[in-house]
Length: 388
Image (cartoon, rainbow, N blue to C red; front, side):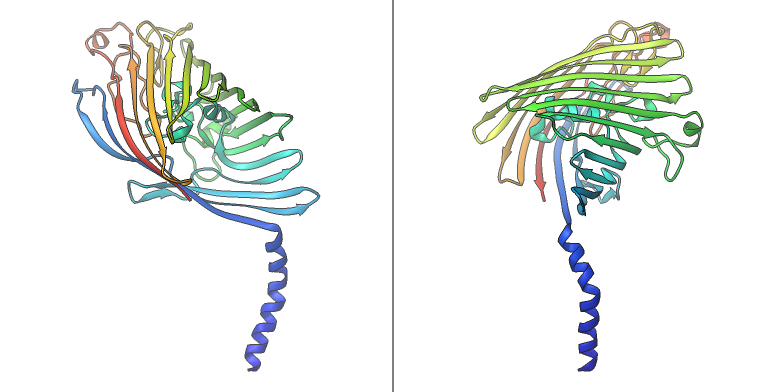
């Protein structure tokens, strides 16, 4: 009996501060599973063009996040988000949006690993009903989303990052981020290494977004300084906006890409239009995007990712989808997407990439002239999303 009383007393003493802590802390477990069946094709390096079937997981995740009130309107915040591959028995602990920081009336500051501010442009323009992921992602050509930072991609999830997000000023918000390319801890294409930190490589980004009623407008910019090489800098500027008419929401997009290369600069313009409309209980989405020929002072055939300098390097993307909610947490969807690469363009799918022929560069040499045409991947998807 005495032991029980002592145990109760000790629990009461130790539990008092814990209970007080719990009154000011808020921790949430959350997640998403998004899995689809795909039927995809696209010309292979050997000239074949088979249709393949794939089961793919699309940005599925499991996370825990929380806040702790520190007084005076200031809160500590944290998040640990891991990837969950719903199609295979694998994942990556803390490999997604993971950070610690502060939040107050002045805005939010955080340190860790997270997407750049340019990514905030996607919900304004992209396929929101399918959570802007899967092979239906509109970032196949836009921002060269298939590429890592080390290869010249934009809109990546970067480690070693510091970010500030402002509060809303009558619908207007601002964000800024810098990602250091250093060798502390794990190194990789989206984190950096010792060689990059010695040459002071880094990535920066920012955005301004106006969101008020039916109007959304976003301007985003991102730069990679000395990431691909000591004297190579990359830039992306994106302007997007949308207006909801009620029966349909229409959005537009313009992007300018610019890369430094050993032979000069490599540039490209991209534009797109999209429409989102409620049809029955579900939502219909349609998108068209057009990337122009690679231009600039670099030599013909110069390539960064799918972007190539020269003629016949344009590409177009078409997409349609329909999403049907079964409940507030469960949605099923179907869609079709196609990338129509010109002979020397080499763009491919962003999420769950698919190997295609990328041998043609427009350089004019005999091997290039004999390569035929680069791939034009397309695919049907049938998927299911569950939120928890």
